[in-house]
Structure formats: C-alpha cells, structure tokens
Amino acid sequence: MADLEGRIALVSGAGNGIGRDIAKALAAEGARVYLAERDADAAAKVAAEITDAGGSAIAVVADVTRTQDVQAGLRTIAAAHGKLDILVNNAGLNVRSDFRHLSEVDWVTVRDVNLDGVVRLAREGFELLRRSGNASIVNIASIMGDHGMRQLVAYSATKGAVVALTKGLAVEWAAFGIRVNAVCPGFVETALTARALKIPAFSKALLDKTPMRRFGTPEEIAAAVVFLASDKASYITGATLAVDGGMTAQL
Image (cartoon, rainbow, N blue to C red; front, side, top):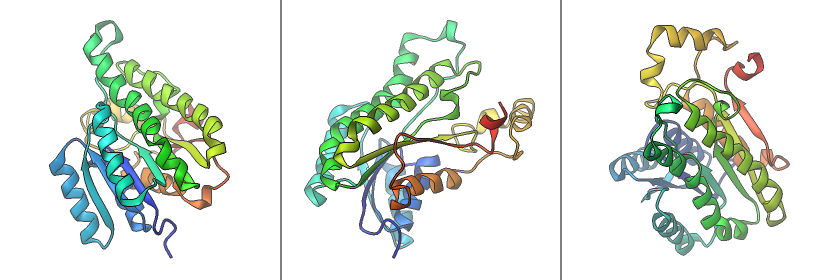
C-alpha cells in the first residue's frame, strides 16, 4: 500500500513548477489531491496528467490572495470528505527589485501570495485539518528566508516569515493532531528561476557555493514534501528541511 493511500491533500500553486511535481508525487503515493490554482487551464492539465497516470486529482480554481476563493475550495473538500489530511502551501512569486526602488504595489503583491496566502489557507483550513486527527501542513519556504541576496529582499522577508509562522503553528496546533513543517528549497530549475539561472556568471557563482555542484529539481523538492506529509515523519513538527545541495551548510 502506498504511504498516503486515502489521504486528502490540497496543494496551492499546483499548476506548474514545484507545485505540479508535489501534486504528482502525492498522488503517486495514493493521496486524493486537490489542485488550488488561479490558472484554470494549468490546473486542468496537471489534473489530467495525474488521472492519466492512475492517480486521483481535482482542479480547484482558487487565488490564494482571495479569502473567498480559499473558502470556496475548502468547502468543496468539506462537502466531499469532511476533512483535510495534507495541506501544502506552495504558491509563491518574486518581484526582483533593489529595495530602494521596490514599489508599495510590488511589496504587497509578494507578501499577499508568499505569506498572507499561507496564512489564509492555514487559518481557513484549520477545522478540516483538525478533523483529520493526523494532519500535516508543509509550507514551501526558501533558504533565502535565512540569507540575503540583492534584489530579493521582499522575497526573503516573506519566506523568513513563513519559517517563523511554521514554528509558531507547530507549537500551537500540536494539540490538535496537526504537524507543521517547512521545506526550504535552494536554487531549483523552474520557470520562476530559469531566466536568472541562464546568466552564466550568476549560475557559476551559485554553483560555486553549492557543494553538490548542481541545481535541484522539482522532483527532489516533492520527495521531501511527501516524506514530511507521511507517517514516516510522525514525530517531526516545527522543522525546516533545507533541500539545497548543501548550499546553506557551506554559506
């Protein structure tokens, strides 16, 4: 039997990149996966890929910056299952800008997805998670939440806040049978990072700081999420797992 057989999972930002691979990996382990994604076509495509592979997936059009969208998606799950076993807060974005030029609009945009989106899903999903009795929240943070880099101040600030939120919720919600952990990816080849990683000097500088001398893959991040969502991590909560080829060990 697969590790997550029969579990109900919700993955935000599941239409592409890391979120897509997380959804596929959870489904491959037997979970029934709901794909929360504002791009309806992208969500439908991933759902079809999962079902074609023999898994179970349902696309839910939802923008994590809209509380009403989050509530509607959770109502769909509540009506069908009455509980939620796994919540993966993956939706995220970045606006590259020197901090002195960062506009109020760009700051709010980054914060609203990267931090407030996590807050909305966790807060609104609490009752369904509590009903599981054995629930797991996995927040996708970043190694940049604990390190600085030019033009990533807003991104780093929000991801650092996600790590702090993870620890606080882990302490507060342990009594309800809800584990809360974070995965902190290093530099992973996705559409979000593709442009930057194609710059030879930038790419070389990053690889020089990475003991494994390569970038990560979405599948490797997904594997860490599956582990933390499973009973194999039953005594792990409040943890942050760096999946970064050793970069933070060397920094």
